[in-house]
Amino acid sequence: MAIATRQILEKKVLIAGEWTESESGERFDVRSPGDGSLIGSVPRCTEKDVQHAIDAAKVAQKQLAALSVKRRAELLWRASEIATRRAEEDSVLLCREVGKTIREARDEVATYSNPHFVEAAEGIKRFRGLINPSTQEDSNDKRLLITHEPIGVVGVISPWNWPADIPNIAASHALAAGNAVILKPASTTPFSAIALAEIYEEAGFPRGSISVVTGPGATVGAELVRNPGTNAISFTGEIETGEEITRQAGIKRLLLEMGGNGPLVIMDDANIGAAVDAAITGCFYLAGQVCTASERILVHEPIHDDFVERLVARTKQLRVGNPLDEATDMGPLNNAANAAKVTAHLEDARSRGGRFLTGGGWDGLYFEPTVVDGVTSDFLMAREETFGPVAPIMTFRTVDEAIEIANETRYGLQGAAFTSDLRTAFVLGEGIRCGTVLINETNNYWDQLAPFGGRNKSGLGRELSDWILAELTEVKQISIDIAKVR
Ligand code: NDP
Image: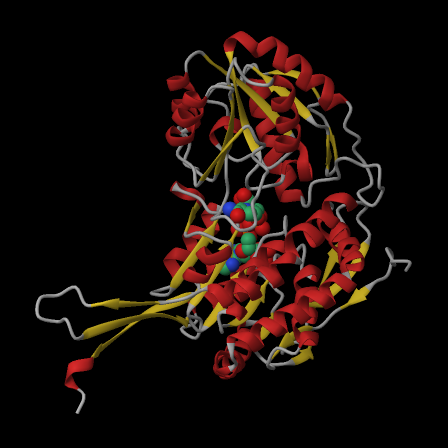
């Protein structure tokens, strides 16, 4: 099937089971970062639209929770079939709105986002409670039933870099657990979330149990957060937004996934070829716009020259260009605000005497893959998340020094290290203060059934598999005294 890459889309939002305009009647345009062309427009929703979606979600949530687990799993399997059928079309749309390459877009849709339907369907069947005896004195006749109940209405606020996978982790598992979901996608990439809503609606989820509202974070997103009708917020985005959400939410469950400044430590006993491969994927996948990216490469002094020479040679081979071209390795950045941040980090590195071994230039949103040597802890790119295609090289002399540098920022999402020594692997694995530490693997590796999340300012709570089911449910204890029945 030929997929249209120039079609102008005029999508509506799904609220209370109806595809509709915003109550204000306003819309906003979305342009492709690849060439600035118009992809289409979506409704500019308001707080009233959010309230309408919440009112319907409260009713629909009860209907969804009343369905058997088996029935909810069947709906998710049906969603999986629909998503598989339209995967190529959704990948092209995602490529156009994010600017990631078509190969990266297919990765997101087929390898990461679409499997969540089945992971959630099968996960909920095995997500069990407990029956425990009482542990108190003189209570031998008590039995404690520990169950997981749906939490209610879940607001899912997502960023632009993974516009299908990230909202779908939360949406699939929330619905599996019997919750209603309201999606609020990033304003530069609303179409992938609308595609998810189309899939869930076609699969037959109760009307109103999934809605999507598009519009500004400061109004639509903030209303989802503040409104007492939402019981949980699953947010992924920047630390500052997460902190604002924490201030505004009041008492409700918050699952926060925020930025990273991932260290990649390379010891002198490492497999250097494998470490170079890891750095290329860690720094340049999705033009570096990944929360788990290798944001700082810490190289052991004795192998510095060898590692850097090989990294620069590989970096020079990367092809930057049109994201829809199958041969492209790296597309543009998604938006001007992110480009301004990357530019500021490059200029700061220059002013501090960083040695640019390759790259360092840009044309609009297209940035060259860049390797900067001689980076120290005072550089902006060492302290803060750059979110661009940059490999900053830092040098260390001992394992303790590597751990100290790795832990000196406010982040703590995903660290990685290369070594051939088992003891060093454990010292680094236990010493690096991140939610995940990967030994002999790129920072950009994600196991879909393992806990994912950050420490420090990088996050609160854990996603994927049983861990997100636990976040999106309420633990209930029911105590029964079997001696006191008549
Ligand atoms: P932002 O924080 O700018 O935006 C994220 C979402 O929040 C968007 O939908 C945005 O809407 C919305 N939003 C903005 N302001 C508010 C508000 N006051 N209340 C409620 N919602 C609001 O992040 P980006 O989209 O720029 O995403 C990039 C960031 O996300 C990076 O820091 C990256 O590291 C992080 N990230 C973390 C991941 C993780 O798993 N830890 C994974 C992927 C990304 P709008 O677009 O309309 O402004």
